[in-house]
Amino acid sequence: MSKQIFINLPVTDLERSIAFYEAVGATRNSAFSDATAACMVFSDTIYVMLLTHDKWRQFTNKRIVDAHVDAQVLLCLSASGREEVSSLVDKATDAGGKGDPTPVQDFGFMYGRSFEDPDGHIWEVIWMDMSAAPPHG
Image (cartoon, rainbow, N blue to C red):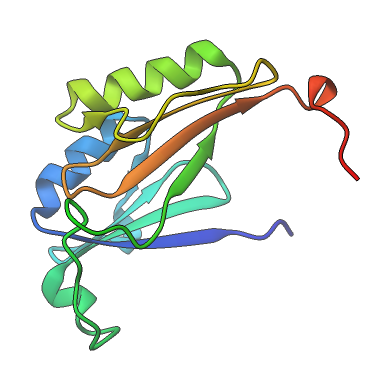
């Protein structure tokens, strides 16, 4: 079985966040969603749990940071090509997110852009041609 990742994000407006993540290609799994949380599925291995602040506080006593001001993580999704990278950033921007809050990366074999969701969480979208990547070692 492939490893799965469940990313938990605190959100200020659950319905707005659900609509945003649906606009960028995730689908809502209603079996794991309620009035306090929504399970958004990007693939059979990538899940984003959107949690209201009250729900988030059930898991940790740590302060919820304002992701518009502070960053704790940079999340990254892979894309099948340069066009998909730009398409996903455009969809995020059209859905109320902020496009390219971090510098565009273009190294020939790798191309990446980014977006912020309505709560300020930064997502990078990266395409890589590993056959053209420089050797390492």
